[in-house]
Amino acid sequence: MSREGVLVVISGFAGTGKGTVVKGLLDRYEQYALSVSMTTRQPRPGEVNGVSYFFVSKEEFEATIAADGLIEYARYVDNYYGTPKAYVEEQLKAGKDVILEIEIQGALQIKKIYPDAVLIFVMPPSAEELRSRLEGRGTETAEVIEKRMKRAAEEAGFIESYDHIVLNDVVDQCVEQTHAIIEAAHSAPSKQKELIERVRKGLQGK
Image (tube, rainbow, N blue to C red; front, side, top):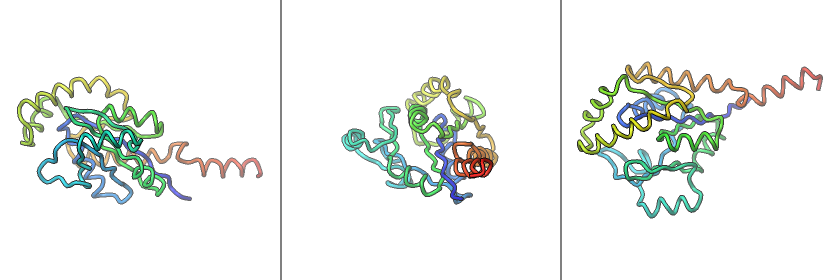
């Protein structure tokens, strides 16, 4: 019996460590495929085009929107971010659990299109720890950090729209908890239609 892939949305405030959690899932388990997002922001040191993100111009991004080539997109701190459609659907059909590391706006759009998607929000231990992690990255100015903290305060009002919350205090524990949530999603009736139908027909003597 083939296993259908689960669409997983992982979000969190900037600096909460969601990228580290995603990397942990990809490193430890073969069942995951990461959806590479498209963005108009500039690459950070060490980021690779086509691996970290598809880095494009504003004009190219808007042309992709017009061509219906994105599942979702949002504008965040003066830049566009979006999820290319074709790759996600191919991987789900192949049985992979597809991870989308995206912002809240996009996550809520995904849930409307894919009601079975599992939305997971990665939380920091405290607001103070969040600020500390942002400062520790050394990639943003004080002004940008303040913008991100202000944005986090706004985003906090949408956390209850998510299916699950995981605390990223000890990374290994957070990774394992997230994996367990995704594994459990495979037991949802919507993911077991083939089994349900087979047993139902047997009970009916068909």
